[in-house]
Length: 192
Image (cartoon, rainbow, N blue to C red; front, side, top):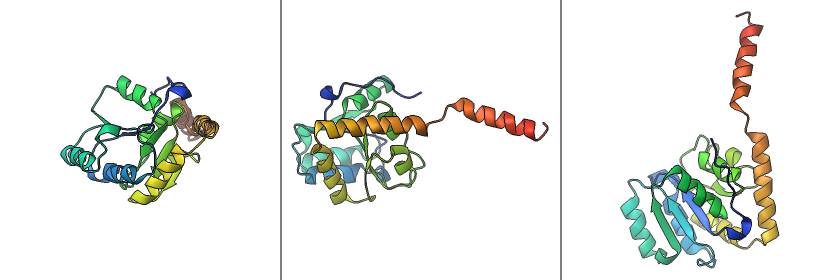
């Protein structure tokens, strides 16, 4: 069940991160990159969804880096609110260094035409698609450059990436019924 309600492109703003706040999900790197990026943070605010063991450290870091006025921390929120906030962002930022299996948040973002900025980590490049912006895991400077690249896009460039990312996702995802059919066909082929 993926979020489906896409926010109008003209009503979107900033970057969003949605994950558990643990060591290898990239929240520290993201904050360093956001602080380094040469962007207008008022026009490109950062929303952090989630919570976890790093909460106190993350809140201190936001303060230390002078990002308090441009960073919104939501904590855990309902799925409905989370989906709304994702659709209201221009970019989903998912920068882990955990060897992610898949990356469900990038699929959810793409389903509402929100393209992704990711690290080349595990299954994320496949889940985020070829229209995502990609850097190496743990590379704050590389991530800062991607944030700048995203913020510097024209409206038409951004819209094209967002639309293309969603279209590519439609060919990537397969309905669950496909697997049940394949299993039944395999059983029949083996005489069972």
